[in-house]
Length: 534
Image (cartoon, rainbow, N blue to C red; front, side):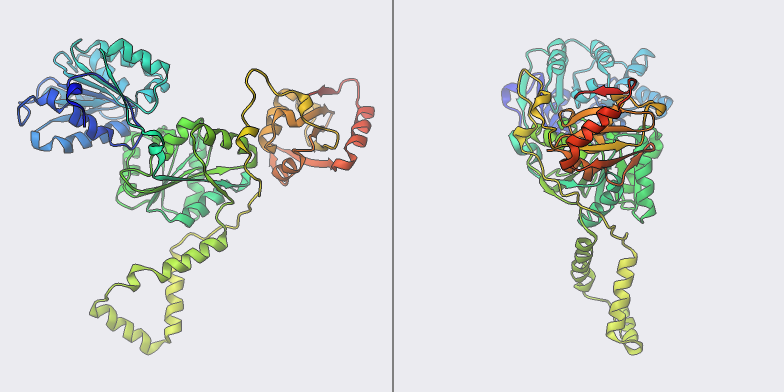
């Protein structure tokens, strides 16, 4: 509840996703719009404008404000990209008390003279940091400059970086700054887990994670549209009811996908970060990060789709060994301490299935007479054991099969081991290669091998840093690289049995033979061979 002195002030609010902002600011500007009147007058030019970064969030805000002001007779119109602009034009011409929209579509209506903000009393910027990240600064400035100078401006943002502060200073007057994150409260209702996985088993680990938790609704995040399509196909093949959500879909397709999740026809949504903000789905108890979020803020925004309105939720990050250090950095920056484990195994899932069957509500409820009569008829024809076995079979048939997955077994790093010292980069001398191991790559000069792309590839596939990589020696048809003794074992485990773009990585010599092998390679090295010291 706002303090009395803040009722008519501009507000700069830092609030985590899922904290009930829409209802909060809907109540905050009620006095500005209605005054002492119990209901709105006939709709004409809009009195309030809400700008949101995505179509989904804008349409959700429209629904919530329509519900909040239903007894006051408010007419709330949405103007979003992907919808019919002529229909929106007709709605604006018919009058609106509140307009909710995305920056690009609102600017388009303003430039075409379809939206008149001359009597506007309040403007709200929802998820302002996201709008700046998406490149909407110019559109936001255009919209704000079209509003009356005496309006109230309520700016909401999960974080308050310098660009947000600059925007607030330009378009707000003596704003009251409020922080409603309350420290850890932003993720207090979310349980974070980190599952160690092999890179090639990520789709299997996603399937087992979904089966392990059996959430009413779950979102699985990928970083690209192609990854979304691939994972959706893999889950459909395994029997999951799954929809996809990404930027390439039309607004109608996205609406159908969300409606399928809301009415229970689908239980899993595979999505890019377009779904990370502004989507509120009932029963969404599980978030899986199949691909790594770009930063700690994205991790929390994705995870914030669950653990909302007092519900508990689980956020699972799938961590290949190559991304272990990145995972630790994300969790450390977000001040999160996850529970580390291997992916749920097939045996664990089968045990849970047994418990869920024994505790199924159908076995506890009272049966009607028709069901009991059919049950007695079955008992007359078959043994109770046979009927129970058939029940188990029917139960299992409707469930996707649990997958056999491996636990790479690596341990999380301590925080001090991944935080670099201020003011300097770690030197090569800090990694010992005296007892390191040589590895062979099935690519050489004839196929364009070059340290410029080999080095990052080795780091990614092997889960090592640049300081763990010694000499890279490139020959006509193969390449050899020396890995430090501290990292060699984990590197061998990470690359074992993998082949990417036709390149395999295989061990050449054990640690005890590393020095001898290095001398032999140096002797064989031709004058054209390339060498790089990390």
